Each structure stands twice: as structure tokens, then as C-alpha cells.
Amino acid sequence: MSDTAFTPRIFSGIKPSGGLTLGNYLGAIKRFVASQGGEFETIYCVVDMHAITVWQDPADLRTATREVAAGYLAAGIDPSKSILFNQSRVSAHAELGWLFNCVARVGWMNRMTQFKDKAGKNSENVSLGLYAYPSLMAADILTYHATHVPVGEDQKQHVELTRDIAKKFNHDYKVDFFPETIPVIEGPAMRVMNLRDGTKKMSKSGESDMERINMLDDAATIAKKFKKARTDPEPLPEHYDGLAERPEARNLVNIYAALADVTNEQVIAEFGGEGWGKFKPALADLAVDKLAPISEEMQRLMNDPAEIDRIMEQGAEKARAIAEPILAKTFDIMGFVR
Image 1 (cartoon, helix red, strand yellow):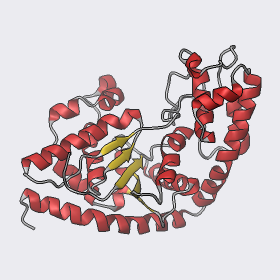
Image 2 (cartoon, one colour):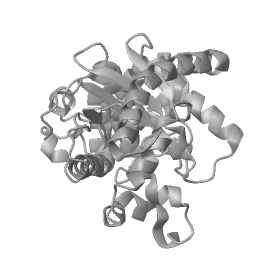
Image 3 (cartoon, rainbow, N blue to C red):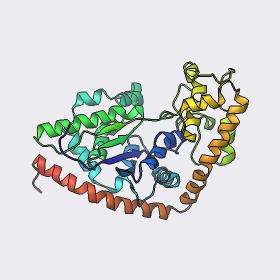
Image 4 (cartoon, rainbow, N blue to C red):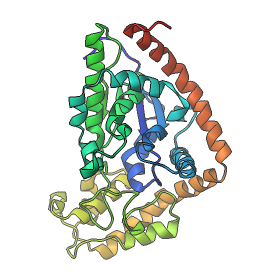
């Protein structure tokens, strides 16, 4: 680990490739809000350059970028407490991403499981960006010398790659310049699952809209989806361990716990032995109470795109003030004549 004292700083981002879901909120945004105003400087980004690893309709990309920003703001990200911007406004991300392409090793990239999952049997025909984007993700993090990154389990490997790139850069150039960023994984609903199949992650690209809670869903839709969520015929168990082989039931208990800010065990203590006729309406009411105000504020913001853009540009100015000196020092360390 580096001996240099780095400013405690959190960086994280969400890719604008379709609408925001409850998974984005519970797995990321809710935690981002909770991190504000504490010991860490907080930087939150809409990582729009990651979205184009697969082709995006330009109009859809603009809308999706603003929707993610609206989601951040509506959920409680405060531009006076956190830096909020979209990635493409800060060119240091792309510049450092290229430098890191020349530090990262092909073998490291070949081990990235997400590329294998997304490319499948079509790996020869996907974009080079889809293959190389983990080094851009490392640049997103390290251009701010971020010390901590809140991530889901599926992104932990990319933060470990970021650590490897930082270590190799520091070793190759005999400096102590980039921090070895720590992935932060915590909480009961870190991985929110599909409402129709508890073995699959909740996704924006699922076949049915009933599989997911969209952050722009209104109160009636939120309630309907939870009441119709797939379960099994058994009542809730007396202990959380009893949900081990019941993925749909476990998912709904996890969601309740995360929305209510209690533990899974506390949910079971309250509802153990009860049937779904009691639990699902209670979950629907809780979800409407927590999510409908966010949905309403998101819709208000989406009706004023100029306001969203103004906030993101102000955030980008603050981001550049941190990123550009770090990028300049990186160029100097590597020997560029500028």
C-alpha cells in the first residue's frame, strides 16, 4: 500500500444505457447520498463514454445521461456537497485512459469476466472499447486519486484492476503517485434481483417491464409490480437462513431491508411466519413511500433539461480543477514534452 497521504475521496459512476432501476438506487445512489458530508470528498459521475462501447442512438444517449443525473439529484445528491457531472465533459478521463492502456497488460484484460459475459460468442465483432473499457474505468477513478469506490460485486474485479494499474505505474516510474483504491461493498440489497426470477439481476434490458422497478415509475405502478412479484407458496421463515434456497423470497426481504434501513434479520423478526398476503402489501407501501417522491422529482427535472445541464457543467468545472493537475503530473512523470 502507498505510504503517501491521499485525500479521502470517493468516486463512482453509473452508465447511461437505458433507464434507472431500483437496483441502481439501492445498489448505488442511496449509498452515494449517505456518503455525502462525511470524512470523504464525494465525486459522482454519469459515465457516458462507457455507454458507447455498444452503439447508442445519440438522442437516446442524451436522454439517458440526463435521466441518470436527475436520479442522482432527486435521490438527494447535493451539488454543494458532492461533485456531479457527466464524464465526457472532463477530457482527462479519456487522456488518462489512453495512458493506462499502455500500462495495463493484455493478460489482465483477458481475465475480465464482464467482457466475456457481454461479448459471448461474438467477441471478434464487438468494439475495441468494450474490451478496453476497464482501463478507462481505472482512469475515471485515478484521475481524482480516489481512495474508495462503492461498487457491486460484479464491478469489484474492475477496482482490483485499477489497483494493479496503479501499482504497476508506481513501480515502473519509481513514484508513489497513484493510490491503491479500495472497493467498498456493503449492505443487504447490494445486488437487487429480478422480480420475476430471483436468480437474475434486475436489469434495464429485461424482456418484461414487470421484472423491474424503474425509478420513473409512478406510485401505482410501483405498488402493482411488488404485489405481482413472483414468490413461492411458503410463508416467510422464522430465521433468515431459511431463505437460502428461496431466491424470490430472499430478494423481496432484501429489498424491504434496504428501503427501511434495517437488517434482513429485523425484517424476518417482524414478518417471520407471515404469508405473502401480508408481506407484499407492506413492501409495496414502503416502496411507494420511499420511491414515489424520487420519481416525481426526477420527472420534474427531466422536464427542465437545461437545469440538469447547468448543474452538470458546474460539477465538471470542479472535477477539472482536481483532474487536470493530476493528469499534467502524470504526463510529466512519463516523460512527455509539453
